[in-house]
Image (tube, rainbow, N blue to C red; front, side, top):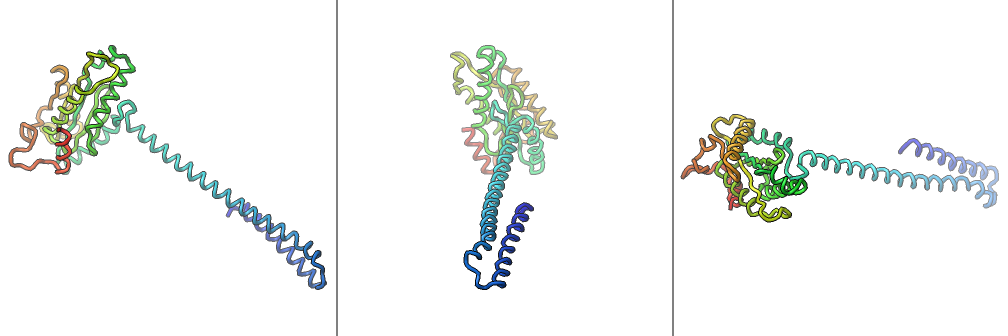
Length: 284
């Protein structure tokens, strides 16, 4: 109860008490007072009581409305903060995560890879000859192209995969619990989907291809998440140098597994059963 309400209650209560005291004194001096006289004496108490009751009801309602407004404003603030956080981590054009979000998570995933001796693969995907495509279809369609590529990648991601816009026309996909062979299957799936996808508004004869680099840890020469990124960037550069629509694995990716990218015959696959099933379905 605030000070204003306390003051009003004290004033109203004092008026009621004074009226009752006046009635008692009047009855004490003349027990045969008429009802109209008593009513006149009691009228201030009645008015004070009704006014006090009305004020308390009004003040209580105002307090509830104020608390409701404060609660709604707090909820709006929380929603705004969530939306700002989402905008700061999600690229508006592609719908993938931002580079900053990727940099934070690749470090954490690499630590988990080292601690639990689990495979971690990184896939860098760059659209081939986007400059020429942009000149052919215009800047607006170039943005549409990037959004479509982002949508294609999002359809491939498992719950624990991380796709991001790594650079202007380069996307990155971080694949936990995925060895080099399985990552190569994902890259082939990306290439197939890009070839099958119909990019509306580009006209006939416009084909979109991507060059892809793959790096996996653990591998020779990969001692940190930065080594993993550098290795994948080098593989992507080799893929682009080899021509359009190429997939290149980083040197040393097969050192700790078979050349086919899977465990040797008779050995247990270094991946959780559920993740292996997800990846198998992804590649089909």
